[in-house]
Length: 273
Image 1 (cartoon, rainbow, N blue to C red):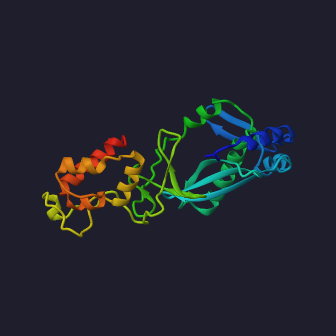
Image 2 (cartoon, rainbow, N blue to C red; image 1 turned 30 degrees about the vertical axis):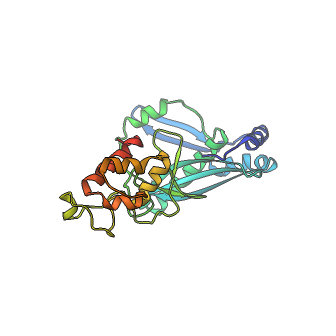
Image 3 (cartoon, helix red, strand yellow; image 1 turned 90 degrees about the vertical axis):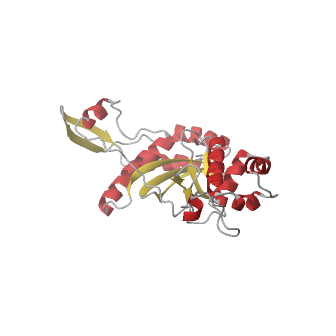
């Protein structure tokens, strides 16, 4: 993520790069692989900080790192800030929320070094290309990471993922794009796009006037705003032969089957089907 403009930040970072001190790789790693031992040197986090902090400060730059929880996982966000107000950030997965504190602390230090090195584009360890990775992973079973979607808190029914905390509220990245989806300010904590239909609704009986409609109206409002569907009322009236001058007035008059049909139409226009 980044601010709307990073022109001043970029100019400052270019100058800071020229003043970075050599990063001292004072730590050594020696581990076994299927073909023998591998050794390399790397710079610990304090060495990366020491080599860069003065040059960053002299050019109005600073780095801060924060963690937050998303779907039971700990995420590290590294932010590069400029005194103009411009900023740049990156995120790294640290581990499961319920891992032992010592393991989490070790993983966090490791990821902090990687996050800081990546956002500043500095090398904190020796590069052995992909050679080491290939040898190590021969002996490591593949583990597929799964993230549980919590539909009771900050849930996005449009993309079936959880929003996570940002500086301006809650949002999530839209898979396969560079865009973000922001949580509506009026969205309650417990929210699902479709509730379970009642016995009468499952038979296609129209909901009783004044009861909760099958369609979640917060989700619908956000979806219609994204679509900019100005003729939605005409579509509802022509398609389902109902009357009304507002969407909120028409939806409760639809049967369960009609509401499900309209949900599918909206999702189709959003490209979700």
